[in-house]
Amino acid sequence: MKNMKYQAKVTEIGGMVQELAEDGNLLIIFNEDVQDPDLKDISIAHTVTELKEDIVAGDVLTIGDKKFNVTAVGNVALKTLKDLGHCTIKFDGDTKANLPGELHVDGLVPEVKVGDVITFE
Image (tube, rainbow, N blue to C red; front, side):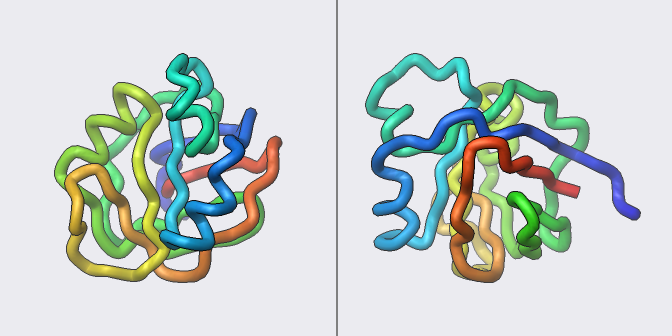
């Protein structure tokens, strides 16, 4: 069993999340204390938590009961995850991050519900 690097519970889902998931194959996550209403609208809010260890390609992202292999990590994704609980998760399996704040995984965007747990290990 790998180390749990990050674990947070979904507390709120913005109104635009479904559209971004369908149109862009992505999910945006933020700590639940984000105040900007525009950011709240496009993102999945989650409990504030600590990034215990850097996330790297080969790690596993779990959302609810669905698992995804991490294929690439942008060079600022870990900093924003540490500072704001924020990153953009792209479900495209790319092995190179196109944007510095993106984290890439394989598979299809899952349906996310309030109460789901998001983990990286």
